[in-house]
Image (cartoon, rainbow, N blue to C red; front, side):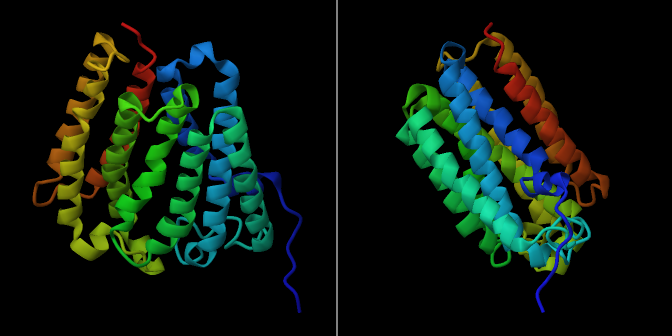
Length: 288
């Protein structure tokens, strides 16, 4: 007897690409391109955004396919299209492979081979390394931060075709930002991750250790954006905004070092991380 699936609703296909997370990736990619001079090369920028969109769509669809059984165990994800039985897993697999396969030629031909190579690295590390590692080691946190940090660097290389200092600073910002952001999520969803057997930092090392790591990574993050000023790609207004955002983010992260900061700490850390990143990349548009 074969499995039967209802007609696929468009919203379920969209859900496979995780649109909220994908929009964040595109936002940071656009920020990297803008900083590199995208205003002078709009066709290349559009190809960069299109190729990145398809790469992200492919990676997320494949992630949904590979984690469909784990998603069924967690309250947060059990109503996703695959565990809920609304989409055939073979369709998600085909969609993911197709998006991934199309994205790389678009990046290579529309931008350059360097950007396409970074896109390939992001796809492979996210789908083949990070995804299976989540149930095996808490070090998956750092591994998963690699593909998540590549989009702004890809935006930069799409315009410049170079791996140089400003692009690498953007990479470092996103890499460090993800660590407290996802530690907060791991603390918020600890019970869910327990049910699925995920090996997160709170499960393996404890809640207090996770909060201490979040404070450490935030402290390393805060000065990083200021390097863009001496590199002559950001100005005084950006430095002021980045400093204010950083002080607020770090201040709340340090609250987590208290013995019992309360159950709302992780949620506020998560929300503040989003405010920080949105404000920071929004400020990159300021030239003064």
